[in-house]
Length: 108
Image 1: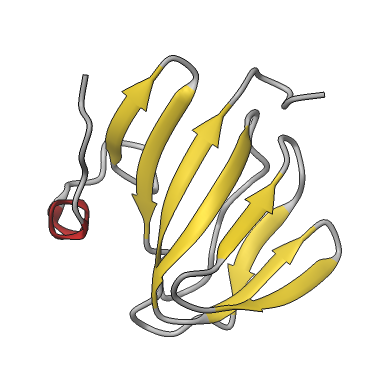
Image 2 (image 1 turned 120 degrees about the horizontal axis):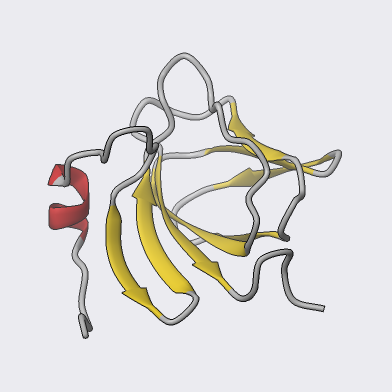
């Protein structure tokens, strides 16, 4: 079982075919990924698990289910399973840790 992931390795990890973020850690239902949205816009679609985003660097706006909030390093953001969400107006260096967890469809 892996117990540590670093920003340096996350930034250098290759993207798997068809994925927007590399997998850095997994245990049971939890996966840890690192996400830097493309410069031309965040193409995310709703996910089938609940997720947390932890802003590692840069700044931007998080849109989730009709609400927009500014975000910067150290902020933690939540998106429940199946919720429409994406990042907007983000800086060129914007990057986040992403933690997916729980059952498909989200926790009750």
